[in-house]
Image (tube, rainbow, N blue to C red; front, side):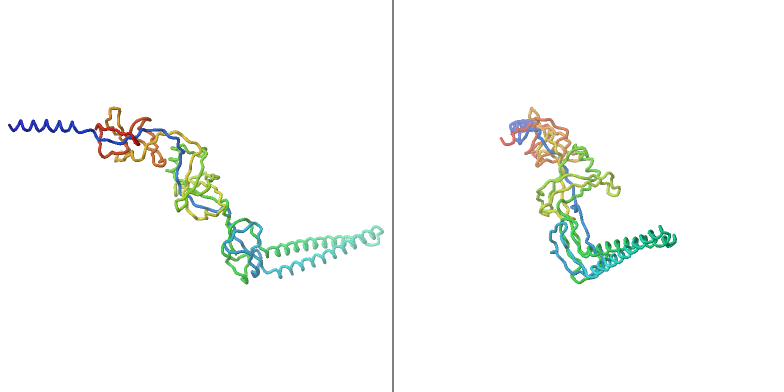
Length: 358
């Protein structure tokens, strides 16, 4: 009797199991998609040009012609140092030159006269030689006076300090009345902001990843930026420099891109995310991220066969594209994979697949 009861219960349980319908799961079909390969790096903004303004002559600062932090143009007058000593030096040099020219004129007249007298043998050869030497000496004095005048005029020109480039000027380190000279700290600094550089150190690991994704130094790529607030920068750039050596201490190689920066949004020293995209697209298998799971052995998906049985499939994934993974190996186009209901199933279980969006 007891055995009959057990047998009856077992048969009942089996009948109940067979009556339970297979669980429903949401599936999607593996598709190909044209994607643009991309990698993300951390970059640092650097100025194309940074110039320190220094005094080249000694003098008191008499005028300052800019607003600190303002945008300035090449050639703008920025500082005026005291001119009086250098104007006096120019006048003195002009006077010295005039005197030297007068001496030269007199020496040449004397030499001409001596030559005429020598032809008549009125003066000696030694006297003629002396006149020729005097003329040469006077000529040398004129040349020295001209050089001294040019030097004095150059020093006078240094009392006006103009901008050597377009850019933004810093705080002035000296106010009107301060004494400066060639040994002083820079008066101010000008930084060019448009265009602007972004340097990108690329690690060995990322270089390998870039090569796997089809990116190389010969492949045309377009760099774009994401700012610290998470918003994309308005303009794309272009790479203009790739270093030829790997930094042994950091195992990285320096690359550099240049970006237009008319609104001065990018500032030297700023860190940005650099997105490097290939100019060419390629067709890849893609699956929703929700369909890809990971365990100790790696990534896998759950495939639903034609007989609606669940199969675990190990996959090799590539980069993320929006909400999808690129699948390098393990799946075929047209196969069905589970995207919802994964927790309800296990391998070899029969399921009721429902197409996503149906």
